[in-house]
Length: 183
Image (tube, rainbow, N blue to C red; front, side, top):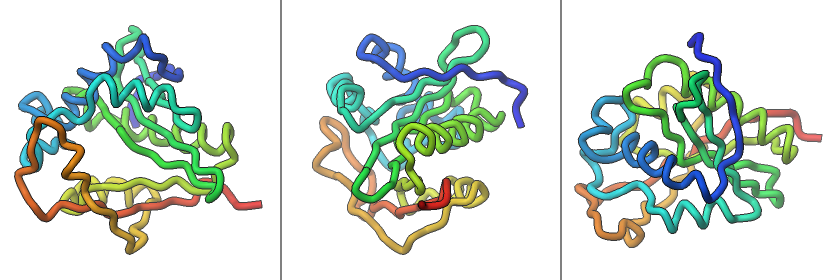
């Protein structure tokens, strides 16, 4: 596990300029190839734009968590969406600076997000979606207790904006983990 001490906080609209480069560099474009989470061979586009990120930050059932290192440099972020009708928190928009991937930051942030969803909302499960072709990412989550549900969800081709998908067979696998006993 990494020896990096992280500090967490919930994002505000003022953080958009800080978050966009981190998120987009972790998923798409040449910079994303420095890490192992790149989708650059699957999609040509930004992962999210300022308007989409603002919508998430302002949504009442959503938080974007920021994780900064001891020098107050943004190292990672993730999105949590509370689905109270199911007792489930959705985990997404997970980004670790590509040059810092593989050092345990992602593991720490995931654990913090699980704890946050359990403490703040009483969530008993964490759910996420991963592009089915990303076997190494699915395996990483499996090592952290997530399991495939057998459910799939369509890929939002219409929401790519000015980008394009490099494949027409994309869809998401749904993964889930129990994060606390249900009362």
